[in-house]
Structures are given as structure tokens and as C-alpha cells.
View 1: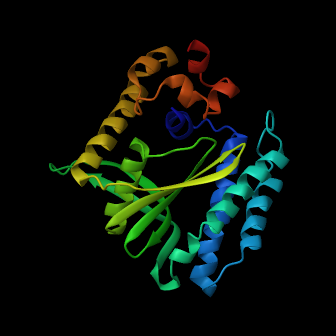
View 2: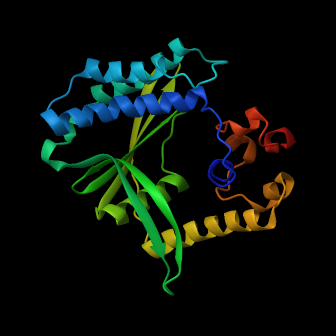
View 3: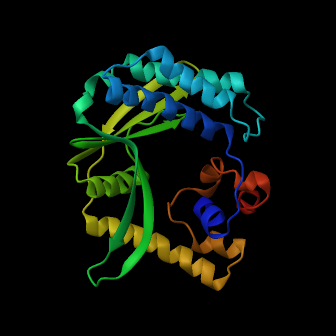
Length: 246
């Protein structure tokens, strides 16, 4: 739904505070790897400063239930926990291929039909692995459909043999880190997923379906809609009526 509103209808809304927390945490963790890549060393305090500055200087967020101080605490605690676990120490300077590495991904089926070009951004690519960073407020113990699809796309695109997810979560008791492997899907299966998702988007766009019809016909993730809505700013802005209908 967010994809449809943002990239097809062109309706852009300010991100939620939790999204900024995720971005700031990414920035801090990636700065550690960027420092290793460039200087073969990193400074934990500098990583925390990068995380903190992202939140302090952001002007787009509409702060409501969470203030900046709490957002900074969540983000910095996750970055510190990640570094204290020693993850950056496991990656050597010469093994880093790229950080936030962008690549156009074009899928073509066996009949030569080309589906849309997808712009992928891999968080960390090393010689044999793509590592994806995920953040949330809840503990997570296993990968989900997003991880299978996203990481498989990256694995095929960058020609690596493994993928993994470093999942960072914050709770009242403090930050937690979960790491897990993500099996690589065959490219044919990846194509099937993306093709089905895209066909639904095109159907909605061509038929001019209203929001009530979209709710019935468009469910690419299979998630319970009110759960998905809690991470989306379009209901809050009044651009999507689904949450009010749940």
C-alpha cells in the first residue's frame, strides 16, 4: 500500500518517528563499516554521534507519542549493543565490497518478458555475503517473507553465496540483537513473487479501483492489515481509509 501511494499516486508523507529511529540506527552501524573500509578502524563514540545527529537535525518528523530524547536513546542503545557484540570486528577491510550499495534489478521470465526495474539498496556487501540490517521495537527470532525475497534478490544481483540479517530491537530492558541466516530462493521463485506483486499494482492502477476495492484485491504481504497499518503514515494523514475500516 505504501508503494502504491508513494510511487504510483505520488503522495508523499513525512516518516513516522519509528522510521527515523531505523534510519538513524542504520547510519550509525554503517558508519562503523565505512570507517573500517576507509581506515581499517572505527570509533564507537563516532558511530553514536552519527546516530544522534540524524535525529537531532531531522526536520520532517511529526513528533507525537515519542519525543526526540527517547528516539535518540533507542537508536544509540541499539548501535552500541550492536558494536559491543563485536559484529564490526568480524568484517575485514579487504572483504567489504560496498555499503548501501545501489543496484538496478531487472527480472526477465523464461519467455523474455521483462518486469519492472527495481532499485535495490544492499546495506552491506562483503565478498561472500550480503548483510541486511533490520530494526524494530519487538524481538524477532526468525526471518520472514520480506527477508527471503529481498535478500535473495541481493544475493543473485551481487553474485554472493550467502545472505544474513542482523536484527536490532529495543525494549524497556534495553537493546537486543538477533542474527540469522536467510536461505537463497531460486531466481525463478523470486520472479514469481515480484511478478504477482507487480501485476496486482498494475490492475489497481488500470481499473481505477477505490480504496474499498483495493482492500479486497491488494494484499501482497498476507499480513493482518491493522498490524501493517501501525507502520504506515498514510492512514494518519488521511490518505488511506483502511485503518479506520478495520
